[in-house]
Amino acid sequence: MKNRIIVRNLEVLPPLALAPMVGLSHSAMRSLVQELGCVGLLFTEMLAARTLPDENAQHSPLLVRSAGERPLFYQLFLTDTDDIESAVRKLHQLNAQGIDLNLGCPAPNLRRLGAGCYLIRDLARLRSLLVRLRRATSLPLSAKIRLGDKLDQGALADLCHLLTGEGVDLLTVHGRLHGEKFCRKPHWEWIGKVKDMVSIPVLANGGIFSVNDARECLRISHADGLMIGRGAAWRPWLFADIGQEIYGMPPERPGLSRKEIYSRFIELLMERFAKERQLGRLKQFTPYFAGTYAFGHHLATAVQTSTTMEQAVQRANDFFAGSEA
Ligand SMILES: Cc1cc2nc3c(=O)[nH]c(=O)nc-3n(C[C@H](O)[C@H](O)[C@H](O)COP(=O)(O)O)c2cc1C
Picture 1 (tube, helix red, strand yellow):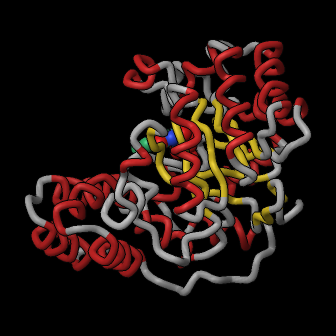
Picture 2: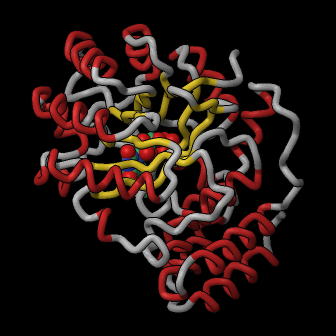
């Protein structure tokens, strides 16, 4: 198993990435998984190319970032070719290590805009966007896709050839169709079919919550690496476990208990975000993190119904006092 990939001129070591997730893949979360070890590549949540240039880099919760968060790819969703150059200029100013194009999100608000997975329904339009994007930057360019509207090898091959032909350097494949819910097991074997269609590195994504899932996904998809989303909020130490057990990385995890990891997350939220932005992010994270506790729904509900950060922290501490470490 190769423990690194090269994306254009960037070495990613190990080939384990934190997925772009709205409300979750922010600065505090990115730092948390980094501190626990073995995450090789970070992504922001999706950002609208149209409004990005007007975001204030110092104050926008979408752009807040600490110096240690790298390599960091900023994910864009694009609606109009005319937005590209100014969005890319902004990402250069922000010292992005790469740019990711969201081609997989089936959210209804993106349907209206013809962005996310709806972009791949019009390959001519997608090509013109990619041409402008590739011309605008020499940074590594990646794309994140789902498997399409139905399992169709020909349609996937057309998409892959378009992406690689227009200069995409890394492909992430979420192994579900556009309409498939998270409760459905991802089609890891179809990620393998995509892998065989391209010569750029492929990250497999979807349904990885344990070292065993990671091993099984890599075996079935023979992908070059993995991207992990919800599993990273559930077990922020998952990258470290996979790094050690699959990629033979030296142990990095500083032996923290779950309570200490949760407290560190709170500390990072307080450090990086204005007071009024902290509680929402804690509420978004907690239901996942609580999932490793037998009575974790008590923690999730206690935080969910809190009206201030202080109350949420107090209630979380009460929960931890009565739970196993
Ligand atoms: C709360 C949430 C927000 C997400 N936001 C994004 C996003 O901004 N961009 C994107 O490409 N995918 C987004 N996704 C999809 C994830 O990146 C990932 O593809 C999906 O969760 C499957 O991976 P997982 O099983 O490891 O979670 C989101 C998923 C979740 C749960």
